[in-house]
Length: 104
Image 1: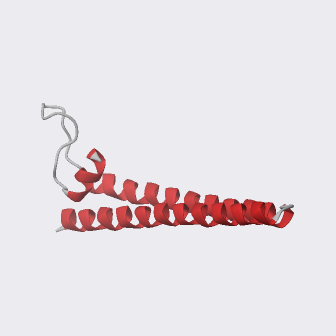
Image 2 (image 1 turned 90 degrees about the horizontal axis):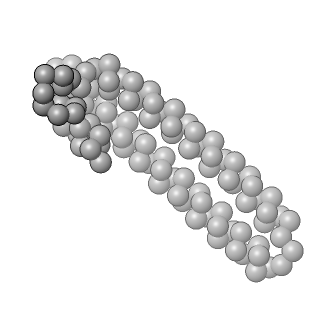
């Protein structure tokens, strides 16, 4: 939450306000965007792996109730991944906006 608030309010300081504080820089936001994009790619891969795993479980399920249970878990897992991907997208947009404000 602390870092998220810092992203939303550029120009704030990291750490305490002593002599060794540093202002958030353009390089910080550029690195943040790169890191967030990498995290989003990992999340998409995890979603793909989970989908394949649940598809195999559904195909191999022996009873209708276990098939239904796996289907429900597959849907829930995909929704969770989708929420995480959307969160990364929002964070990237916030970082881009903060970077644009710094460049002005």
